Length: 126
Image (cartoon, rainbow, N blue to C red; front, top):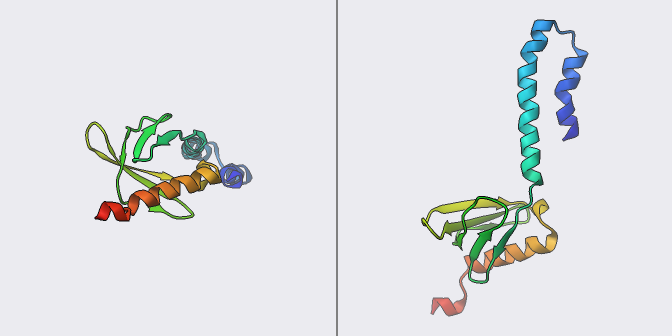
């Protein structure tokens, strides 16, 4: 990632550019660094939420609304997808959770909870 961030600066510094060309290259470079800085900042922010046994989801650190999980969540070793409906407006939301956003135990526990919610128990089918 660091090499990718340094690549534009290395290209600009090793080529012979006139003042006009350098000024024209400055705006895209500023945008490039600003965009990736925002991506990095978003990735650093912790995701704190609670998930109850009955599928109630409450977010602590984001402006996402609380709600209840519904079927359709994705479970894989690379990503988890949470699907929920808000308590207030019955709007549908989704959020992707990657393994590096939590520790391994929390990731497995969340995957287990999603699987249990996606697949109903035999008692609920009777």
